Image (tube, rainbow, N blue to C red; front, top):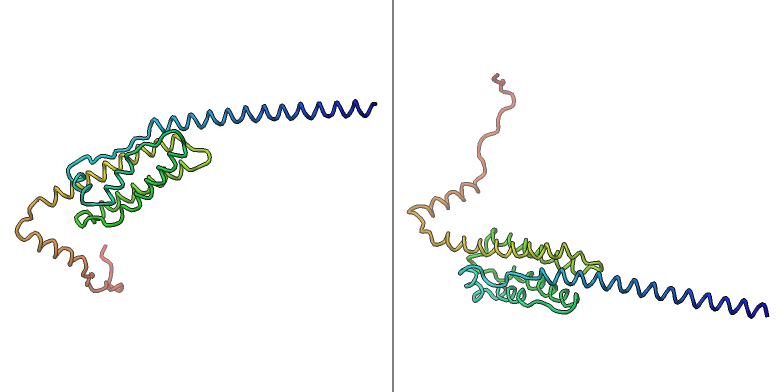
Amino acid sequence: MKYKIALFLLLVFILNSCQNENERRLAENKKEAKKKEIIFNNINKEWSFIDEPINEVSEKNVTDWKEWREFLKELGGKPKKTIGAFQKKSDAIAKKAMELNNNIPAQFDQPQIKSRISILITKVKMMDLFIHLHKIPDDKVTFLIGEINKELVSLQRQMDKIVEKSKIPQEEGESDFLRMLDTARAIPNSMPPIDQNLPKVE
């Protein structure tokens, strides 16, 4: 009889502890869902990219430069409903950003443009990395969205500067002068070495 009572009390204790464990897990799940909802709302509120050309040069590039057009198009749509949708969109944006290095128009195949494209790609990849972490740092993701927009503006303004600069006519002899300047840099210094045995003048 004593064993039956002890066994009964043990069963009651085990059932009670299981119920407490389930309640604790439910509370943790609710807390986690609340955190994810806050993260989703923060990212959703800030997810807005400059997906339209800001000047005529950039607008012309949309028609002429396929990779630029596809990148801006990918920046356009806004994901809905879940963090997973934002992760997929971020991944797609990162892939399109990487393609910007392909087929750069000859006029813009210059270090100023390439460096801005590299910075843009780096920031897009950072955003993609942060949004795919288990614990998403939403503040960093939203900060990088703003930084990506700044880089987009910087890149488009640099394109505009290059086009405006190309419209300025060169003066007579300027191209010869620039060519001589480049070849002068290529010629090594041909001064004889200094004799170390000469007395120093003080």
